[in-house]
Image (cartoon, rainbow, N blue to C red; front, top):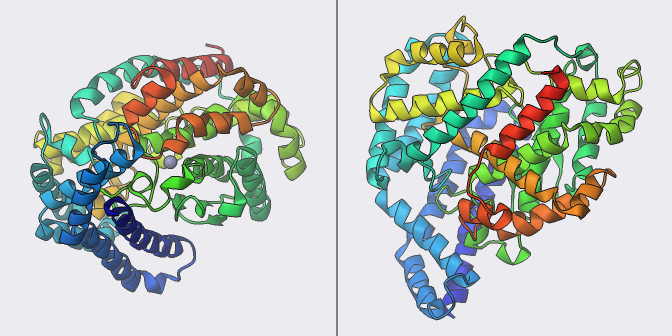
Length: 506
Ligand code: ZN
């Protein structure tokens, strides 16, 4: 009785979160701009209701009863994992005073407009007071949440539990040591053709082709749909309704094609979670109050990167699927073959903007942000010194001069919402994707499928080892169960080295 009542209650929390998320999906795909102000209030109200219901005396009493009821079960029983997830989240929320939560919401509400103005005018000084308040607030949050070594660890907990500044430093150093020489060597070689990617590609045909590739890798349209937006994302309202979005650039076709594959990769994680977990803690991020079954943001990103990069940007994929691209775009691709297409979509071009970065240089954008955020939080970097620190890192990593702050430190939306600690998941996702893909292709069914443009065995392997488990295991437990190792950058580095050596003749 106690356990069932507890699950019912978490189901209600999950319902509130899903209602908030569908409002957010609508705001980013359908809503006229005039609705923004009232919509922000509606989303905030539902978030507060979900949190209050989760930490209420009544829910905690139900959890106490549930824990007592399942205490006799083995430590790795699903029922106990359900209770642990809820207990950890409730403890987390109770450590953060309501006043601080309200302050962050306020900051987020005004921050976006201040940032948007500052960015439009490339005027960092205009954003300084807001960012200083954001840093101070996050520092206060970190003290409430608690940490052992570094306050930034407490902030990462919400997105990548278990990850710390101390664990990231050696990982980043290894990646930089391997990738910097690669970027330099590529810069000295002739670039592959990309002119054919910049021809006029009609919007509807791009949407249709992206969706066709997304369904090919396993995205289930009976429980999904594709829409257009400004900043593409995936969102789920339980595994039974998992939506993706894309952005169409008529003169740069890779943007929506690989965007669709990326978001479909995220969607698979949700669509193939264990059906028994629907509306339970194992399919709800009760810490972040987000309806998601992926165990961490990095684990989630591993699935999007795997299907976008390891599958969708592979030579084998285009050897098999190029005829379909040619059929969709007969004039644009008339003078192109599969090999040229594959080389073109893998071109490396160091740039200033993270969201436009290629597969190889993307991680540099992430490493610089994580290092800078950690330094802001521990006080070793002042907000006013931020542009200089940013520009120096871009020069060091990518050899580029940053002409203004709009193209530098003001480019990301993240800090305007009061949020610090979100960035590391992209690189962790890349590293995990390398590990998971390497292990998966050792399975002969998976390898045979990839060689025949049948992506079902790969999807099934990911479902067996990743998707179905939802939040049952920690990210590292999941990795060890699937690959035998915790986070290990070697397969990712080998993947990059091998691919770019072939394309650039290194
Ligand atoms: Zn992603």
